[in-house]
Image (tube, one colour):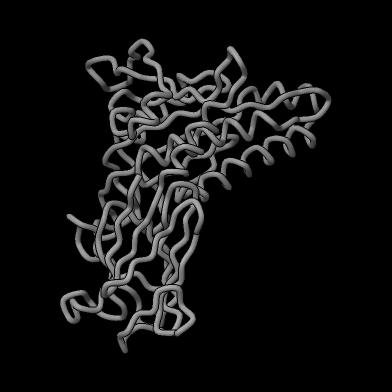
Amino acid sequence: MTGTPSSIVEQELAVLFADVCGSTRLYEVLGDAPALAAINGCLAVVRRVTQAYAGRVVKTIGDEIMAVFPDPAAAALAACEMQALVAGLSAGGGTRIAIRVGFNFGPVLENKGDGDVFGDTVNVASRMASVARSGQIITTEATMERFPAILRSSTRPLEAVPVKGKAEEIPIVEVVWLDSDDATMVASRTISSAVAKATLRLRYKGRELVLDGSRSAATLGRDAHADLVVETKTASRLHARIERRRDRFVFIDQSTNGSYVTIRGEAEIRVLREELLLHGSGSVSFGQPHKRDPDSVVEFFCED
């Protein structure tokens, strides 16, 4: 691990590995150029889905992608959609392409310089991917226990597996994204249900704005045309935007002076021309910290 101590931070993330299965066989059957195109197309799908679920691709290792997500549910939903979309791809000549996915949630060390992550959580996530078969999603039982109920219902326990450096075997589960009896996409049912329930409530001086299945975005700022007009001089005219992405809500700062976001139970964060995933409840202050003008904040409430 490289980087100075000040560039290394510890945080909790879900670490996911998605690996293209049988890539050697693809090169043998298809030839170099078609096989490479098929693999790159598959990895491009994985990257797009990662971004859609507020994740970040850390690096590509040959035909494998390593990514991180803010929480276990985001990683699980992303993994399901990865499998569902890759299942519809063809490598040409009647050859199918598939991935195996493994992930784990826990503390990691992140190098802010290059974005790489390290630690036991990463090692266990890699082991989960190695356990997974073609078309499977595997995670630890401990990670599964952090899922909301709707996701836990789409898992099944497997036999515990040994992990290098661990004295005891680790209990694991499969995240079931496809019901083999009737070829129903479990992922689709789960995601649709989660998306339908996801709601964000914004409150400001007696006014309330709701983002749900019928409304996916809102603008905030001093401009009279903003969806939620903020009456404070430190706010920009079009200060920020909140977008619904699947069952998540992302705060996007577009201001000159930045936004100060406080998620209940966490320290206040300054966001300037960046995105921040909202969760739980909290408040947003415009252009200055909350304590300087506590009466001019927008409260938010994420509801599943």
